[in-house]
Length: 349
Image (tube, rainbow, N blue to C red):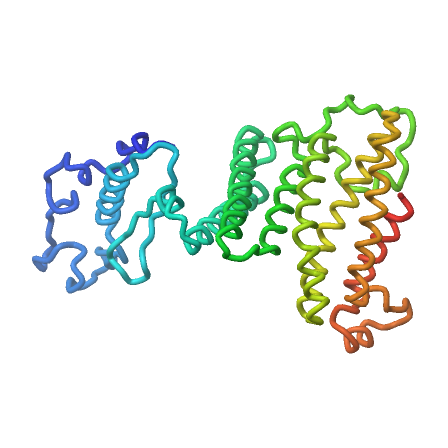
């Protein structure tokens, strides 16, 4: 909302200077002891309540002063401000982030990129846990804002890399994956879901089990293609990092990068298989072959990512205690679902 639209009329009249009764708008009554009702030295009786922890009048007065401060200083249109107060400090600081971004300093570019990413993740949590699925208008606005923040994060990371501040491949890949997720949600907030009756599948024919077990069944083709592009960018950013980790023989880094890459590959396979199903229904033979080849290639790459994690090195008769004692990542409770998922995609392919 605009700063001039802040509802100042909701504040108590005493905090806005409209009431001159007494300090903080409270009446100056005293009890039998001659002390005010909330004085800390006044003895408590059965008729008097204990002293409150804080004064509501003071809180309202401070809130009114803060609103006046924001209205006076937050005057630039389409600008972002950050209000900050150090722990234990009575002073507050207001930063104009739009002006800071023009300083072209690496520390500020990095700070702004992380702020944009955190705000985007917070919007995602609000959509998942707070907003009602029926409130499609608000969800649409939140999703557009989230995508704008994620795109801004990628642009700032690219500027930081151009300034010699590092590429930050893992963060950039995570941002690309979040962008893809915004197109793969299936709540119909902004037209991401196929309208009932618009699909070309014959309703009289049963849906194959392999196709029905794949996700993103209700996502439109346009959103699938956009998600495919963002996932491809994420894979391109992470692949050189994995090659470097293998050259350095850093087992911890190989495992971390492989796990993140596997998650992106997993979504890419599901997107390609869903696109292939659509192309098959509409007789788009060239697009169908391209989607199947991409899915097969990505499936092969995903299987190779699991090998350093020893995901295929377990036997059905092996107990959980034996597997966990040999390797933390070789636990059937965690590796077997991944392997079964790979097998299911191979069958569907």
